[in-house]
Image (cartoon, rainbow over all chains, first blue to last red; front, side, top):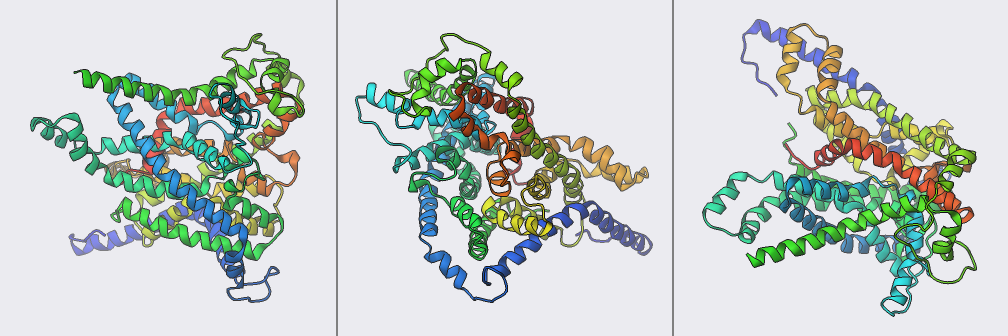
Length: 300
Length: 285
């Protein structure tokens, strides 16, 4: 906060000014704050409360809802799938998007811009628009199997009802999100001090040495940021799963938390739903606090 | 020299290969919409029609390109307009709400100093990063209490108070130099005047970035309508497209393209702001 170094009289005026500032800020914030309280914060308190109560919400049950969530086979399956998805998809996403950023940066600006646009456009393509395409590609008698059988002389793969669905999901997710992460990488590259590059060039370092000794260390904050953001975003992979397998996927390998939540929701299993939501919120809060550290605490 | 050239060739192949992975689906949708239902049935019929034999194929160009499906879709399929209109009814009120509620809030968070500001900003960030699995439960509890389940408001209202656009807009307002505000105050401008004349005018990139990101998110929404709208007559296009495919492939192809066009248009006009918005989540001051 600012220190008052001025004389006594303006001090009072300043205090009054500050008071006015707080009031104005509050007025600007009021609609949003009220909405957030009514639609998120208050119901979240209710969610926590109901997670300890029975379905009707009138009898305290201690931790039994949480225990029942952990014992639920669907929850275990969804959690395991999510963990597997994170373990495979996040590293791939980071590597591929970084490779894209490195390669795009080597191009002449006009050409690089074209590629950047092309890679980013997948972000704009609605999942619903490519549903037909994905079906045509990955169905049992779809285009992929046509290529597998008739070009490579291999046996057809049942993409939708086996573990292969998981890999289709990974591919879909990468296809949709690489462009987004590439933009983050490009911003990270631009943030590296240009003077360091010049110094390295003057010292006679070649392109590869510059990359190892200047670029990579300079990218560490970006890497951390992208890792955490990608971790958080993998909980939003339901859209891609819906694209691959619909609301009720044939293959268990792409059964995700959202599917389970939808199930409990249709069964009106509110107490388990609340317990699972609280669990998830706590896990994510942990990850987000990590992210806060990446952004730096100096929000001022 | 040779090594360098080799590196260029390899990188070129990778770049073009990846680009094809994006362009081919777009090509598929464009040519698909210009192919007649009969020809579509020949190519990808095996996938969509029960009992059909053989494997699906896809030619580079349709043999007889035609606007037949698109014309039929736009002229003789009122159901399509209902679904398209359903999507619009969900998307645009959300954006308007976020604009009205979010812009002043972002301005306050970015430009005013008040006790609890940092904490509030942290809460907004945490909320914007929570996935739908968490917010669907809170939204359900409120929607149920308010009696707006199974209406479009069950989706519009929670989205209006999404904190994500507030965050992006606040990052945009951070770029507005504080000196301008001080001189405006010296000239006797009130807080509202300052907000509109300086904040909104100079913070436009941030506002547009938030709007582009929100539009793409809302246009692509699957989870929210799936959970909160039981009544299928309210469903947006995004949920119904796979249903149409089983009835008429040509119409479904056309509908896919029409669904895609607004998103791509917004993208091409707003790419600059979209990139700004993405970077806003990445750059620390």
